[in-house]
Amino acid sequence: MRYLPLTADDRAAMLAKIGAADMDALFRDVPQEAVAAPEAFDLPAAKGEIEVERILTRFAAKNVAAGDGPFFCGAGAYKHHVPATVDHLIQRAEFLTSYTPYQPEISQGTLQVLFEFQTQVAALTGMEVANASLYDGSTATAEAVLMAMRVTKRPKAILSGGLHKHYVETVETVANLHGVTKRAMASPGRAEDLIPLIDTDTACVVVQSPDVFGLLRDLKPLADAAHAKGALLIAVVTEVVSLGLITPPGAQGADIVVAEGQSLGNGLNFGGPYVGLFAVREKFLRQMPGRLCGQTTDADGRRGFVLTLSTREQHIRRDKATSNICTNSGLCALAFSIHLSLLGEEGFTKLAAINHAKAVALADKLSAIPGVALITPSFFNEFTLKLPRSAAAVVEALAAKGILGGVPASRLGYADDLLIVAATETNTDEDIAAFATALEEVL
Image 1: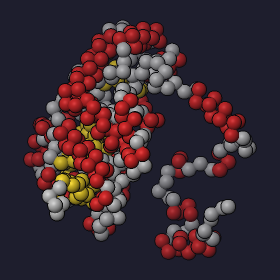
Image 2: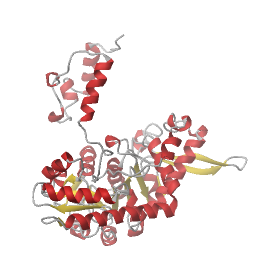
Image 3: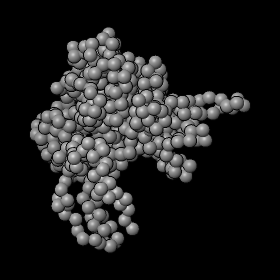
Image 4: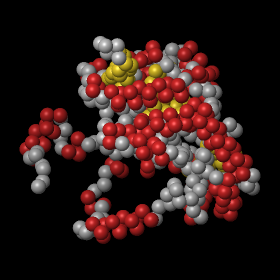
């Protein structure tokens, strides 16, 4: 049975009401290169379930998966070991089937989980308060820029050249609809190089550390300069495990900290779903997007949890809404929280130390190869190499040998001879040796 409730007259009436001449005008904001004509799809005729399964299996066999061999890719998504306990717990029916607390007064278990998640995020980032998560790190960054505009009532955002390209594109997409003007560094540079760009129209400065090349930055001078001009500093972290070793952004003067939490409890999953972390100074609490769970007591003095802040238009007047985002899918935040709870503070610090040690060993091994230069002077578990030829070609050659050897910087709009490499606790000494041998062979 087909379900097409709208007639051509119905659609014409709706288009006339909103002032669109036709369906093409309705979707005019969609880039033309993203619109494919029906004839562009060369789809086979209908097939049976068994046939379809075999065809898709053959397609899948062409991939080199993260678990098939040595894996050194990063650039915003990282392969970490997720304990079996995490999957076991999140697949319990009471967790797996609950999405988000639409009836918070009876969702005590969900609210307590989110409250504990918020506590963990605040502690990790060195901030005073955190929300119940956003979709991912990039959307959290865009929301942070909009929040800074509301707080400062200024139109300009300065984006560091070391900010991940996908994050920049997400901010630009949102900015296009909210009147944000921006200035970005043409190259990564140092965080201090952003200081001359800050003026009285600047709402915020957005800087990533470790940046897209893995470079660790001292945020304090930039924070002081931003505050001197009445602007906010937004710190972005794409590798949350780094917070186990480096000074938290909050302690470096950040006003808003956003992060991608995928590294804890969540696999690579072909790019999602992930979990965005969002933490702020308490004085900015009422401008924070998303949801905030709080702890209270009931009439009998018993501890309980409540949805303290709901900032989207489903809950409050649209003109008062700070965001249409409530949380991410919730399950990803729970997986994050379980993994971090299993590690504990000492275990998390140890995990971060192992990651850094693996990266140092790998960097030493690879930079010793003739023609290879390490261009990241300080890093956590990710660094960038300058190669004697195209990094994209090198990556393809390594993949043919069963090694996923990093991300060519050209994919993110940088030089073709730069290779971004990451190492985590999942990389063995044998993996590192195999990578070094294969890289020397393909150069």
